[in-house]
Image (cartoon, rainbow, N blue to C red; front, side, top):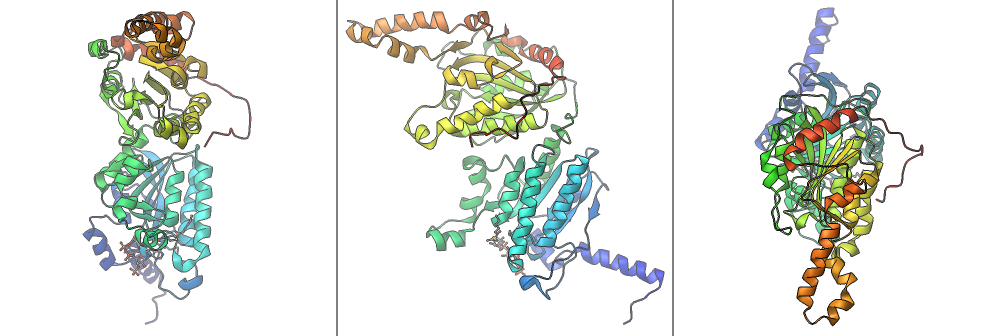
Length: 520
Ligand code: HXC
């Protein structure tokens, strides 16, 4: 039948084309997506964005006629929904891959839609949120699909440190699809329904002869507990999308702005009697740093990043009198709070994120040292511990540290010591700030004397007591100017808030260079 060329006919035809485009890969595939407990690309955006705020771009883009895609059925949008909208009233750019179209695979036109979005986001200074549900490079497009990934990776890196980038993994993220999220600031995986791997179980079996499953290879438990790939997990898609909104509330829209100040309703003078009794009398006994965090920060709210990985260090977002801050805290309950390879990497990653986006860093310090031993040395605790050191030195955002108990040796220096240009260093009277623990020090300094002693145990005890009296006290560090004030634990919240407000206008310029050479 001849198309209706009247204005009315054209408008009707347009509406029909829009309706068709909205169907993605068609009802059968949408039903299959729902049957897996997954929302469609559009349903996800509807849940993520403020109501009626989504403006779509590139609805009628279709694939390029290359490789095995020549002459194939065309799907409007080419397997990805792109555009912009608002979250809590703030502008964000979004893309959502449509698994119902060729498995959400990334062809060149699909990639161009995303890179165009990045170009706009960079020009306007707004975050990009990517919802990933993709089988990776579209095999039928060959190298043109790889070219698309390359263009996207370049944008990811250009945008790094300029606008926040958040990736939500809501299905497979296979092959090239893993590296774009890996280049973004924060990743959220949906538990049980998302997988990230460079190559799938079948290829692993044929190439490596290894039997494995999707879950073992790339499920949330691998990436949240072992690999440190995903920063967060959500129990389902709704929770994961809510997490995006929560994360954004702590971040500015770009590196030139500040995070919104919200919910400044907790008393800024609030004291905590609980903190006066939280440190055990036995210096080797553990206590829970989460309890300290809950007492200090606004309303006890804490958005933890990497909650399951390297639990000997705790990192995450909180607020002080409404101001968004990043927390880096040793956890005495795990490995006595010692810094190992993963803890160093975890801390360093978070410090660099905070520093990129003008978020002050509050460190809570109770650290006996770097974790010693063959395993850590052979896997590179030197190279990896240096990352944490580098990140603290490099950070020019306001830095405040509170030593609650131990701060020994190299770990004392690393954990936001005054010498790394920390702006304000507090210590509790329970602090032990020393070059090393008394046991190790006495063994080194008095080895010969102890060998010759008739009663080495009693003598060792005497020498340790002497050492502890001389070196453990925070007053020695304070008298040397390495600690600014010794404060009562109960007054920690008001003292940090009081220290923070003058620092909110802090400007620190370092020597100009192309970029530093962080020990990767
Ligand atoms: C083209 C793809 C595709 C891909 C899936 N499809 N992946 N089409 N290119 N990469 C298509 C399927 O053919 C199928 O089409 C539809 O998407 C749904 O896929 P199913 O396999 O039926 O779904 P499911 O069982 O849920 O499995 C999803 C999957 C699996 C785990 C993603 O499809 C898979 O393993 N795909 C390959 C993943 C992979 O190895 N990617 C690497 C690509 S190379 P029909 O028409 O039948 O419905 C790469 C290199 C880039 O990415 C490197 C850059 C650094």
